[in-house]
Length: 190
Image 1 (cartoon, rainbow, N blue to C red):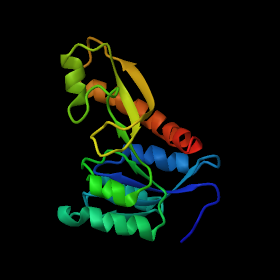
Image 2: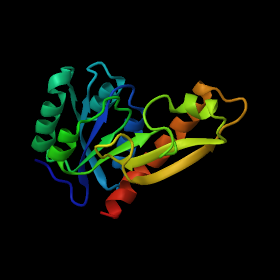
Image 3: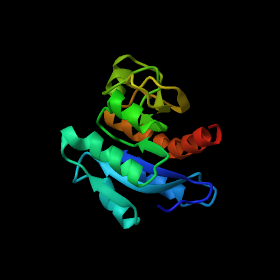
Image 4: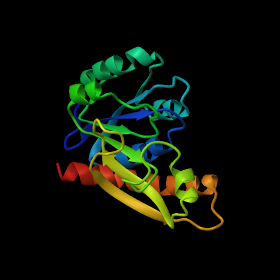
């Protein structure tokens, strides 16, 4: 398998349009990036992000079969000698068994200022609770949902005029900005 000197072989797991995937791919092509994205895996065969990855000459796999998703993914991660997995809009919870078997770092991006608002509907919850700030967190994946060590966070102000959709757009914009930085920060401190 191809190795890239000084760069970690990386796989990205997605479920949808892949906007964070795009920012990671763009970043990976920079000379000083610490990752080389080798593989994109999705639990949705029709995920828009797979098409983008394919156009970027990255191996793609859509694995629809829920019961076999983790086993197939583990085989692919081994086959492609993957050092790091980045979850980017991946809407499936990986089992503790998967995390143990892969045994290398898995990072996730979450649309809240963890430890606040683990799980889903983060923007609705922030607005409903009249929070002044929302944001995004990149954290290490552990067996407990959205509970791993936070690597990087950035916040945005919630305006009175914000609704779920406008807040989601603001948070997504900072996600694209901080995910690549968090990956490099994490790998530099390994």
